[in-house]
Image 1 (cartoon, rainbow, N blue to C red):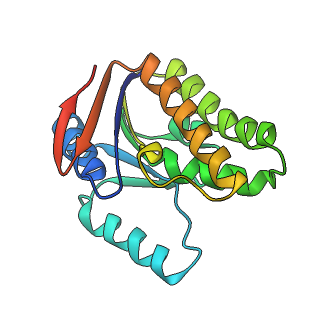
Image 2 (cartoon, rainbow, N blue to C red; image 1 turned 135 degrees about the horizontal axis):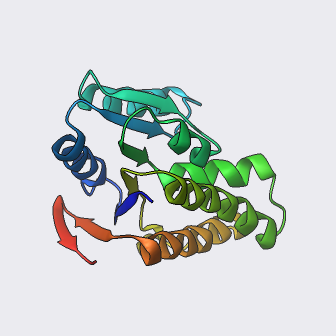
Length: 177
């Protein structure tokens, strides 16, 4: 079973930087990054490129906007960074075309199930990046509220089974577990 480290916090709180530093300390150049974002517009393309520039050049990257568990199993290294659950679960809702809360929650849960199953099936360390979206504004739409609730549930599931949980606030870490 992989050691599971969950790093969470708000937007631009330092989560990805922390995850990369931890992965570098554990795996050196032997790290696989599972990137969940898709370049759906210019702004997202710029964000993805910034993340790429900030990673060591020798690290492996697997693009997995869906079925992240399969990417974890396919990773060629023992140190794996999944960045990030927030985007992954949002994409899952979109692909599902959720019209009801249960559909949205099921789509998100399926991705988390895949991550946890992959974690149980192999060795190494898995560093998972996610956001705390419940500290933000209250979403004005039902879909936004379903997403916020579903990500909170997903984060609880990941944290419950994690070996370590780190909360990032303003670039500073607080170890929760």
